[in-house]
Length: 373
Image (tube, rainbow, N blue to C red):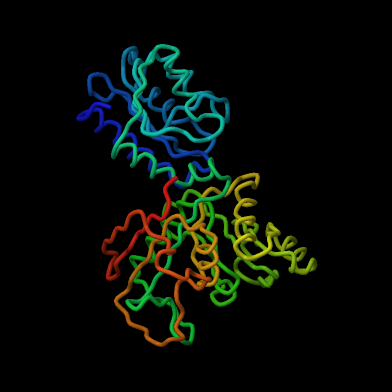
């Protein structure tokens, strides 16, 4: 890929793609820019699931301008199959666009380079980005990429910890370790994912709603409770709101049939996870969530420590975001953020691919990418 204006316009397409996050899943977030000699003629992004794709919106935004010989910059490989919308490759060819600069490939089975091949076969110059632009394009769609490759959702683990790494005092008090600015940011993350997950311990202790309570939320995430024996109270706020915001309860075969049926009558969807041990049951649950009629492609994991530890033991945490608050709690019995089996040696530890730190009000937000899809 050429540098300079090519790179600037592709990065602009990637920036536009972010505007669809939280509204287009299970589709990917995509942005597109059409330009001639570096001058932008039209731009667009995939705004909502089932709606026009970024390429079509950019063509429409050009307002009937002759597009033969122009360059399309798009953050993801154009689709070549009929879904809720017609193939974008058809729209590109019909518009006469002569060159397409693509941020990253589409790993799903119906794509995987087919769209690029169709364009090349029809005489369109296709350029696949490399270096930093491709990395940025790939990071924008980690949930889509993981789900396309594995069938399981991408998992973002979020926690608020004290300076000594604790999430609650020895008596279990945890509200609030993080500051108001950090809590608002966490609500934005809820609005960007398909589901928010907690364990039954957190559900019983906090009676949470697990909704995104900030202005401008386009779609509330599903609430997922990992509850092996179906103990979630029918008068809990999660069950009470199940007819308005979907609730999924993940149980094991040990859950009494009567409790499962009661949760279902209350509006919850129940997933029965199987496996010989907890990590296996967790992997099975994630696979089932990824196969729902409206699949879960991304999860914000909010705890508690036992469930978070099980996710880590199963190798299913893809990114971790920790708010570190200026507090010291002390006490050996204070809760840690991850209470699974863990590893025996430092050499076996999960090592982050990247680590970023930035202020969040009076806290510090640490972001660690553990896997890249």
